[in-house]
Image (cartoon, rainbow over all chains, first blue to last red; front, side, top):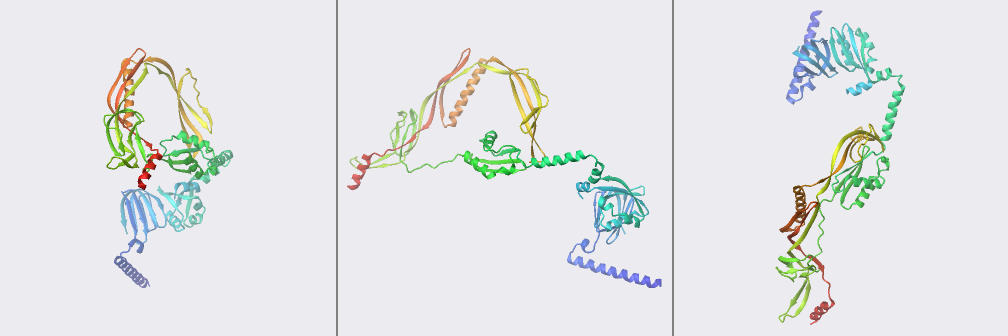
Length: 105
Length: 410
């Protein structure tokens, strides 16, 4: 039974990868912005004390040393000290503090 | 969101205590509840939220097993609730706005722009005479009518624009700075006569018959260039007389007398005390804040007045300022010989400058200064060269007309 579910999962992952690959191809050939078509995360930093993330979906984890965010395509981890979420809404989040690392998962 | 709107609508700072605040935050995000200033502090979370949104988060907190504690309440709704018993202060705020509204219906300041020849005081007096004074209702001001009145009164003003800006009446003016050159009527025939006496130095005749020549002494009123051209035949008899406009550049040399007497005694103000006081003015009533007693009878008073305004053009009928009082005594002094000669020479130089501006060339100066005990007298003659000649219309004699007609018939 578990074998069947694993197979199904693998096939759906393959399908998604194919879909993503075709979408990437289309956007590249037509020269369209990837952030609007694919929903790729747009990360903008101002020095090491301000971070803006667009195409943001939800907060997975938040402490004063670590912020984990779910974007539309991947997970984003911000590490640092005294991290502070100035505002967030359906599209964008602004994190301030002493940023030490940004990691994609 | 604008902090001002935030304050007006009111917001709360809440503390989230519990198992998974992230879930609560994501649920808020899903329901489009705006959260800002989210801070993690020793395992607890603090964030700000609008007052309207705060009433809707109870089911979300229950679902995510979060305990919510209000830390801070900020905004106008909380302020009003806190001061609900201070009715008089609310009443005074209402009265203030009513006063502000009523005062905004009147004109409290008149300003002129672009005037050079006519001073603000002159124009202000005229505008006041026409009934446009500080304190007039804005609805009663007819800008077009005011523009017409100013244009009719002052011919030098080419363009006037009056407009109401807040509680200020702004009158923009453009004056005629360049002199109008009226084209001379060239059709009229005329003679050129002397308007001053002297000796002719140079003479260039463009049109007409010259009646004098270089070196001649001429008298005032003497004919210089005749506008009657006589056409003669071989026997030197006049066949025809033609009338033209006499035109010539005639420069004469003449002497003018100069006499100027200056008194050596003068009065000088010796300032004894200087004091300043503040004043307030409401409408036309002026109040001195700390009145000063004048010890001396003679004094100079300099006042600086400023009008209160809320915004750039929202003037109010309230004025404030500073009055400076300089008390002095007049004492008699005498100019020294050097000083009085300097003063007399300055005045003589000023007289020369005036002559030069009129196009007069100064050739010789024989002005001498005599200093007495009480006065200095600058007297003498100045030799000048200047252009003369004024036009005089030719009176057509009947005889001339007859003779010309006879010749035409022949």
